[in-house]
Image 1 (cartoon, rainbow, N blue to C red):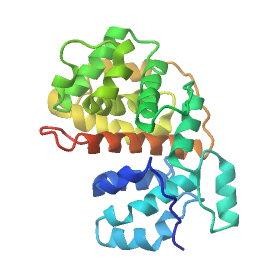
Image 2: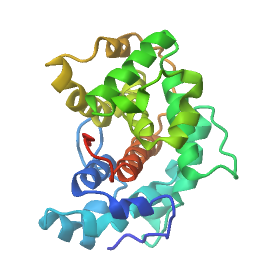
Image 3: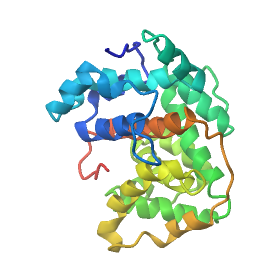
Length: 263
């Protein structure tokens, strides 16, 4: 049965995403992070458009099905119970899912704030929340090393301060992309289910610069606060999925730029 996609300004960016990025997002939505088994509530793998796209090794025509799967997970487990009972259930819009996650980490989702700005605030909050056992200098170094590894050193030229991060991200998608790599990597120390989306990207970005080792500053992952967030079944899907959408949006925004290593 086909998934029902609600027109959604927050997820329309997926129409511009590449196959590889859509595949990462689809795997987060369809498979459990602990044992790689199919998620009980997912419908994506049985969606006709998705199955056809998989056979063609090009998920771009199926972006609406992937978006609909994220919408269907909603912000809590109730949405999944409903859709298992009533197969014509349609989910909630991306902004509502994003706002729910923001609320979990202490970011107030004001109605007048646009989706990209709210995403920027979420990234900054994750960086600050999960790096409180590190110095500001260490965090700046991690951001700068990630920028250099991504071919985006110019984005952090002229100095960088954590308190200015959100404002600068709003004006420069390159810095937002860097934060979209660093934030889930930091958070994965306390929320291990984020590791499979964050650590492979960090390794891919940084390995050309430092051989097989991570940047020394990223060793802070093992020392971070054990602060916890809500980790219910739906949240374990929506948080990594939203972080993937955030990264995809910044990849799309940077598309006209040369020399970017999309991870």
